[in-house]
Length: 72
Image 1 (cartoon, one colour):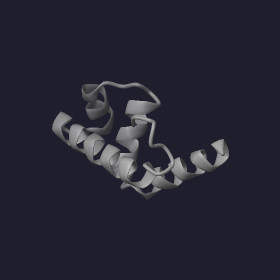
Image 2 (spheres, rainbow, N blue to C red):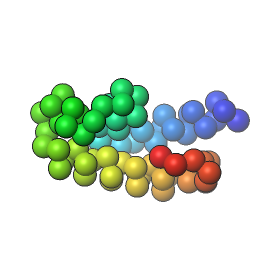
Image 3 (cartoon, rainbow, N blue to C red):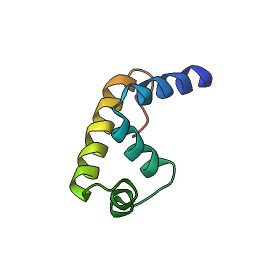
Image 4 (cartoon, helix red, strand yellow):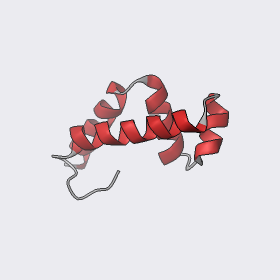
């Protein structure tokens, strides 16, 4: 079951646009702040916020049936 969930997360992440994926990975895996992500990616903070918000919404929609008890 855990392998299936990991696979679903990987698939959902890979389906996101590259900039959105990168923003999410930097935020989740590296625990970077919005301004740090903006610096690393050479984007505005508002763009980073937008990518994170949209990415989270897409992941919730795609992964909801598998992770109804987990906050993304």
